[in-house]
Image 1 (cartoon, rainbow, N blue to C red):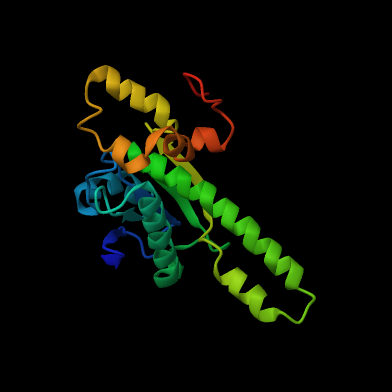
Image 2: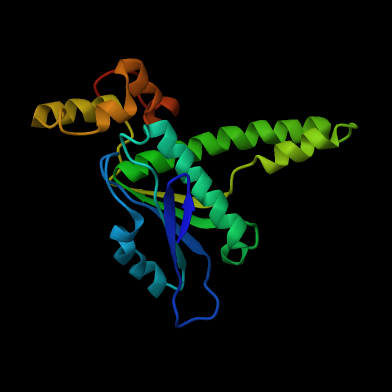
Length: 209
């Protein structure tokens, strides 16, 4: 069990094989306000049966962190996993799969989008400095690149926060859920926290594709 910023992950590996065929990072759900990695340890079993190592990633939940902090925690945990267990990465230095459930799928996809933006910016810095004397800037940019991921799998995820908030209001649970507090404040916060909005799949209307 490794700890990162008050969160952590459980790393599991099958005892029937000396070498796993990659690692699956599983990000649990919990409506942004609950959940610990150990609660989801049984989710590792199908992946272990497929000869994958599994890291069940935890993160601070609301009110200890809003969605931005949760996304940051997931990224930090993945970086620690890659740094401390490089033997579990594939031959391209990647985590095989990022598998996420429910609100964890929302957090996981936001991490993927942010990691893509950060990687592109860092690659641009490395490229600009590749033929210049500023090797330090290039090295710092390369160091800041997030751990690469082979594939993202979202299970029953929430990708359009405004639409899901209206769904919660219709069920009368919007005052009980952590959605509004963790993803707000207000409409601007909801849009910014929506992968559908960031990807251009949602135009601000009633639905998302």
